[in-house]
Image (cartoon, one colour):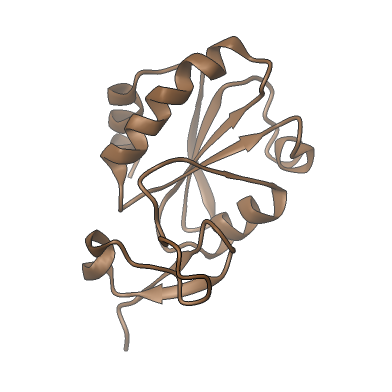
Length: 144
């Protein structure tokens, strides 16, 4: 029996199998050859979000934001720093709720910024409001 985990490519949404011991070696997607789990937030849409949540063997942290949102803009660099702190064990996504309205509606996102953490295809927890990088990383680690 294989201990490989599934990792969904942030660039092309291809599902890859990878040895968890190789996560720190910057694995690349077998289809598009781009980094499989970049140490930065990945902007995605409804389809990409659903595939990541459903198929990723890694926890998925999602920042639901809007371009017009001041606190969202203030938190963006903090989320980038948190993504570097959490890599490669957590996939960090960004979803614009104005562009990806299906995800926002299905998940009942009522305010932005909202961070939602998913593991094993299920929502583990969520928090609304801007946070520092250290607070984001601590919150994620405490929930996993």
